[in-house]
Length: 301
Ligand SMILES: [Zn+2]
Image (cartoon, protein in one colour):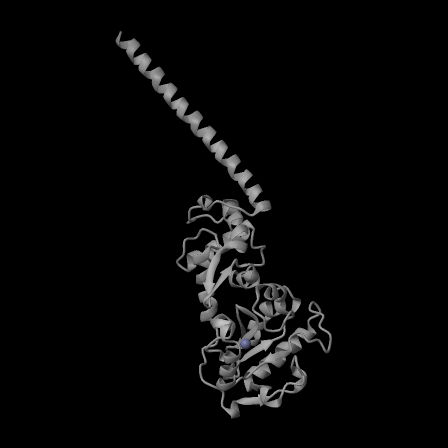
């Protein structure tokens, strides 16, 4: 009797264990199938569920574990909403190149390799290392870019400025008083443009408009006047504290409509060879970008 009871208990226990194992296996199988199916779908429809977010990785950064992050990035790249300069913004595709430069990679932003690199940057910056470029991580990256900008906040004095020749300008008929540039900034600009013209991959013609100066030194008074003319531009349009009065900020022609912040225009600009060259090379000449305006560069040395 006792033995039989034990037997029955053992058989029941075995059945329960087998049952759990089978059910777990089928669940895993299903979720893997769902995940891969899901990943497939995301690639085409660019829709993802936020619940697929992977847990922060502490030990391994293998690409495989960032598959889900990559598909979320494919969606967020076009759809994440955020605010800048009092204006609602959508997606981060306009900043692909700057993001790649920040992460020191050239991966396509919707790949697992990109997500893996992003997760390292996130970890270094005290963020959850998910590999997902969501609103929080995007705002943190933008803060980093903004911190890297020109610190000088004093207006250029006349002795710090040089008059650049009309031929350096996008509009060669620009008046002389509008063609002043801080001395070191101008030297660095000329070196940078010479390097760009010498770079066969860029293939600039001698009189190419690309990389010509659109605008350089602007007095505070002139800057105020510009703002009065477009009062609705907001701080994302014409910066209230625009550093053009330092003589160290240059608006450089990178294609498209020269200084138009519409997303459609900026989408053209960030894909021109001239802009791409600047993102890769401007830093070694001392120039850093203002992420929101592809044409605006500041001499930070
Ligand atoms: Zn500017």
